[in-house]
Image 1 (cartoon, rainbow, N blue to C red):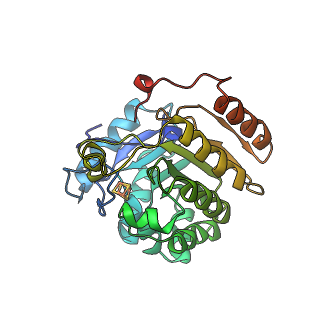
Image 2 (cartoon, rainbow, N blue to C red):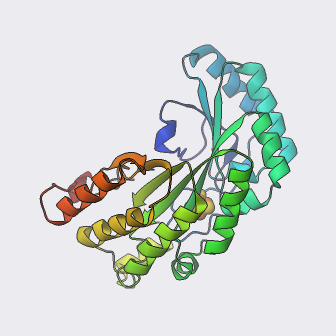
Length: 289
Ligand code: SF4
């Protein structure tokens, strides 16, 4: 497979064929995100994609899932996406799950009928970044969204019956807004009703505006105890949510995963024990993005 730049995929796509159909992210403005900073957004042409499909046809026959990279593939036109799904069906007919990243802006670019059409052509799963449910934090990190627009985007995906996985970022508010960030993120996640929630923990990157703010002392990174409190508060708000819950990304201080609501009490107790020092935390040097 021929990849341009960094190819990033969600942890749940570890066993998937990664087919890069676009390079970078068309938005590329979030202050915490260094994934595609120096890569202008562009589309790959049919010939390059066909070559990768032929490679996958020959060497990836054991994989039955496929992830379309890069950062916000859902922003591609409906016509282009339908063509890509047809090509996947033609070259890799055994694929039974196609997923992609779709930010709220990209989701908004599609009507529910268009999302339904994409689903009928094979789109099974959309990974969306909420990052925070707090309007002030979203504005500070230039997410370009409000809690309301993020909730509306989730509602469209749910209405189309496509599996929605939502990511939020612990620590993103810095120290001052930490309690509000956690409380409102939990509330908005509950309202979004995703099928999967993934909580990551901020690790500032030097090539980002937020990373530069940390170095200059303008942004104060919350320590592990504050992050555990955020984790607890987010989970505490998810009283009725039925979903898979992951806080076991490599950036975490406390790897946790379970099914909600079944495992919620157990997960909350584990966080309490960790806050009391009875569960060892992942040491700083082991954390990674
Ligand atoms: S929309 Fe996603 S990929 Fe694009 S800059 Fe923001 S966090 Fe990064």
